[in-house]
Length: 420
Image (cartoon, rainbow, N blue to C red; front, top):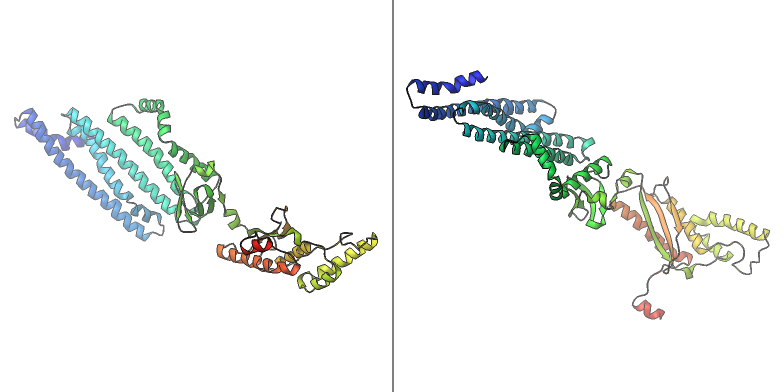
């Protein structure tokens, strides 16, 4: 190829010298002619390769079933490649054209080399974007942080590209330059601290599968409560339920605490864990006459009858003095209410009976006795979940008075005056 290049660009100078032109004039005239010839060759090469790569690829993309070649076309990968091939030809031709201009040859060759490196990076970037878009279109990769992987690769390539460019411009050996950069690595780490932290965090987030695109997360420190819509090297974007967007530094996901609701969404139910406060002064033992009235409540009628038999047998067996209600075994209105709520929850259609279903009493507080409902709804959608929970507690609050119990409320206004 070198011999053909010399023939194409060397004839003009030889011709001018045969015509007894001054050597300097012959050099500049032949340079002008050679630049014109090179421009024409490069232009035709560019047009040919652009037609072959861009047009043909576009035609092929329309006829194939795969979407990857369409993404290569949309990301202009072929267009960048069509620029690269003529540029490489220029780089190979420069030593021949500028043979008599050593200083120009050095400068021009370095500039062309830098442009080749930059163009190569753009080609790789456009290819990676096409791969990213192709993977995102597949369901198995739709929730993966593909953008982070692309950014990590491009950062590594840009660092390598900058090292090569600096080495070309200043005519330094690449090994020497790398050693020099190693000496100032502490400064680089200080400057790119957030980027390095984001890089490490994105790897840990991906490897440990901490979050995915589409996950519902809550992070009180940043006011985030919504779905993850984007995972980048430095930030994670969350679309909150109020339609605002919160940006969280990626490294905060491994340095701070956050809640990922994916486990709940993938499970068989969504938990309800809420309590009401019952006044301790309203809790008491129940007599036989009162139990007869409570039998009118269908859900606990069989339970009361069974308990009456068990309690009566126990008290008779131990000769219990029932002149005082505290003696022996007894039923309380609070315990009966808990049993009623358990039966109610077991019959409620919106709950998953295969998961925990519990009505329990918690540690007494200064404001009363917490009566907690611990169940799981079958419908995990926000609006339906809230409706089921409200419906259950509507019934609980309305049922309390039937058991002669009272819900604690802090005195305020007229109530406070009347109690005083």
